Amino acid sequence: MVVHAAPRDDSLLTLRGHRAAVLCVDWSPDGAHLLSGDVEGTFKLWDVLGGPLFEKEKAHNGHITCCTFSPDSTYFATGAADGRVRLWSTRDASLLYTFSQHHLRVISLSLSKDNNSIVSVADNEIFCWVWDTSRRPSRDYVEVKMQAPNEHDLYLCSRLSRDQRQLVVGTSSNMYETWDLLERRVISTQRGFAGSVTSLVFSHDGERLLAGAGDMVTSCSLTRTPKVEDSLQPLFSARFASPDPSSLVVAAITSNNGVQGQLDRELMVLRGLDGTIVTTTKPVGEKICITEINQAGTMVAFGCEDGSVGVYEIAVASASRAEPNILGKHSQRVISLQFGPDGAVVSGSEDRNMKVWWPDRTNVTCSGNDGAVTQVGLYDSSEGLLAVSCSRDGTLKEDSVHGSTRRARTRAARAAFFRVDNLIAKVYLAASGKLLSAHVAHSGSTVTCYRIVRLAAAARANGTSGRGESPCPPDLVVVTAAVDGKVKMTRLSTGAVVKSFTLDQGPVRTFQLSGDGSLLVTGHDDGDVVVTRTDILCPPLVLKLHQSWVHDLAVSPDGRTIVSKQYFSYWSGRPVEPPAGGGVTAELRQVFAFRGTLARRLAVDDDWTTLVTIDDAGVLYVLQVM
Image 1 (cartoon, rainbow, N blue to C red):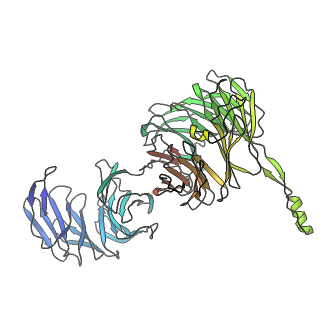
Image 2: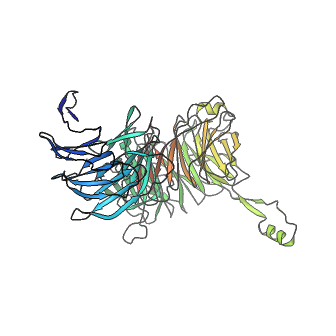
Image 3: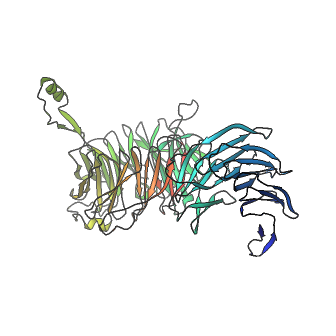
């Protein structure tokens, strides 16, 4: 064994004595000892300055594959190909205990900072061993079951995080897993390495992880899961005020989860990647049900169940309870909210009205909507600021089914009509509330999701152009998806259908367009994520990676990264350049799991390096895209 000086290549000391190949070495935390193990099952404990102290031949019945010191350097552990883990005293190299529950080769060992537990990893299993107060290991142990035994071949290396909570394990399937040892489950996976992940090491601050795979070393970050003082509801708004991920601002609604004394549906604002609470609202009389953050990340607008709409400024650093500025009220619950140019706010309500709230505390009501106003927006035009609303009229359609028997005819009569939500998009002058145009954006089947979007120039060129007599910009469209899988893009300036097609996967639960409009990504009730080219006719790409309803999607501006979310996990794939046939392909890159069972909404920064979500357990997740 040779000891080298860093960063030079010349050796300081050569320790000789092993008669076979050395497979593992470790340096004691106090810097006084070295430990080495070889293929004959022999370990040597060395005094760094004086040579070998102890040698134990045939310490194991196979190769010693790993070894490590305890944090206080008073004992050390060895693991071997015979599946055994043994603890030894540093003082005299005496055997303290043998763990023999592993069935395969032990590849890695980690000892806790409090010297009370040890984590051992074998080829396809992980064990957590706990010590009692007398430092005798208890015979009770925790076996961590693999989440997907057939997903990869072998574990190859592991590292324990600084807080002793997470264990990162490299595998032979070009990925590593991050385990939560308290919950005994995988909370994230990192894929896409050039080869098997054979080595892992943490930075001194525990924030970064170096992973060695093939001939490359990759710098990674652990999953961040900061918990907040109160539980948070999974409906939230988030904004990155600048390209720096630390500029994150999250506005979330609190939930008392039935605990007396905790406030329900207050608004809490968190700043930065660690989820620091900077502002909570004082009670406003009714529960808050929707939030929106402005582009600069300096103000939050909120709507309440009693119809109140308010805003307040976000504190810069220190935690405080802000006094909300109530702008006014709808007569019923607020269900849609957006910031517009120059600090204007637009809101939609179940009272069928849209209101524009101006910074000078005046407001304009845009009335005449056909149902509850579920989507709103403010957009610049040649005639000033335009307010756009979407509502569903709840049209009843006659059922054409007739029965041949009396009983069948009776059943048919009871269900002679069924609800079909025609989606109506209306454009108003924001300054006066004057109605400029109204178009049916969808009809004939029940709409499941819809969104007002701006199409890029390339996408506009493929559809009917021109604004007619409407001042509405020609790039403004309403995209709708229905229970029968039909997707339509309707231009607000003319009411003309830009594109229309039907997906075979059935009801569309959520969707997103790429920046240039050439890719449509849809999420479905059965867990499928479907990627469709809108510019050419080709078969869609169907990604069957979720087990249940997909709640939200995000697509990067270049269309090369997709993130989808459902009940238990979300993943990111990278559609590559279209192949010769014109289709789309993708590969799975990352998977994260939630502590709760449900997460509905997803936010991504402009550089697509950071993802934000909140699950139904009230946990805020800030996750890194690799």
